[in-house]
Length: 312
Image (cartoon, rainbow, N blue to C red; front, side):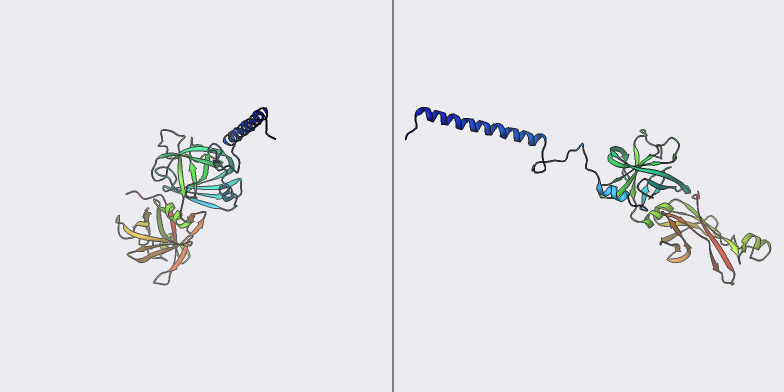
């Protein structure tokens, strides 16, 4: 039965209504996706003002006993800093200067903070840039008068942990710009940086078990036992040492040195001159005394010490 003109008009009105409803709901869906994209949206982007938590960063700091070795610094500022994580909330920090081998040891509390932008001088270039930090270390006492007691850890683009400290050099027009220290390639490389710029002395302290000065006074030891064996020197940044040998006056010779986990060996022209026993604790070297037997059969006890660098 053919439809009447009235029925055809009614059908067109119904179809147009359905189309308009589809357009309306389609527009609502698109608007919702633009304002609040969901997991299935192919155009979803991470909001820059809400950075994702650094899962690896938190995990690394949670490891009790983890030690970080940092190098950097410059004039009047520490050249090496070791951070020992005692637990999730406490750390021990050792800061070292070439002119003061003893350095400074401080305790610190550790906490995770909301992402914070810090401006710093980049290691190597000195250029100022900003980094985002989430781990704050607050030291128990000022490392330097007037300096902030806050330090920060963060991960570099290469995935390494770096340390941000106050600018202890004090040469910045803006004290809010901080300094950057990068992770040393290894503990021994850290020790090499620790030694660079420091001085040392090597001296006999006992002869056949007696104080060597007393033994000389009592004619139990040769009168030149100290003067012919006392040496001083400076470590340099290129893995060598400038050594003033006995009987050479003010003249110095260049020696190379080699580090292991337990020894420091000095050599001249490829021939070992002296090997010193070394102990490491959080990257800080100490040198116990040791005893050798000389050509006459006498025993000589030696002492190797780090000192402030010798000035020409």
